[in-house]
Length: 393
Image 1 (cartoon, rainbow, N blue to C red):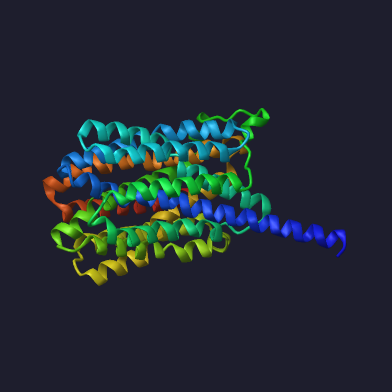
Image 2 (cartoon, rainbow, N blue to C red):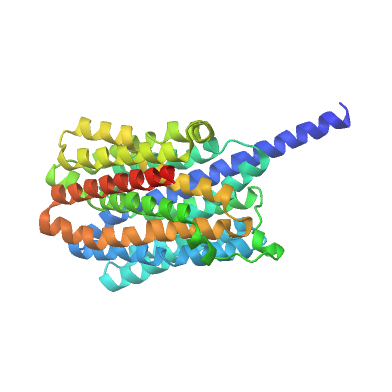
């Protein structure tokens, strides 16, 4: 065997190891998100009424308005974004675990604040690390990211069989998965913070990018409606419809299964259709999604709605991430992606937590879901108005 052959084999093994590490990191980190977003409302709801639960659920997103921006700037200036992500994983694990030891309002409020200070950075950092690696090495992004979707759906379905008898299992699962996440991201290829080369990242210039801000707005609408769904649809299933938590777990798994085709064909979809057509399709689908969730009570039909529209909310975020990776200055990519999660996720989720609880108690679940439908329809109208004017110009 000559040196050239040995070199090629070494490169292939190194590339395979890098991809497996990133696949593992995506799966584990999005699995951590599932342990929070799919179970925390059930945990808090055991001890507090809906209005108080809504306020507590709004604390995390409130922190998410500011914390991801800070971590994005830190990551852009750091020698390695991986180290910054690992630090946030450790911090989040500590405070998530501490949630199980006291259920009083102020204790939960403090722990949720500290938890989300670290945890809110996860999506922005792991996405930009993976996107930068795939772009630099000409690797398809979808197969690496798809493990995150799979784990986000699989964990709730598996764990709901146990959480009905012992909800505290989620805290032990989080600790284990967080440790594995740190190991995965630290063995993954190191992605540098480009601001460390002397080019200073700038947040202000991002606000002058009107297309980026429009994408942020669409992300915000999709995340408000999605957060309302996550916060109050489980209660609708188990309370209004009298179903078990297992149905919620199956529904979550089927919903995220709808994302799999999107991530498998990620690069081809963006190359063939472009961002505008993907945004348009997603706006149509989310409008139909929440209309269905407002009025359907038949379980198989609800599961079909989840399967057919599961990827729609995700598309908005990844249109933003793809735009950022291709059009934003290298030294500001992590900041821009984190800003999208702060403004597009944080603020809408605060509103969904506070207003969602008030709406549900005041006008009921169905009327509240109709409001979500109308918000998506308004975003669709804005899309046509904006791009029609752009075409006219």
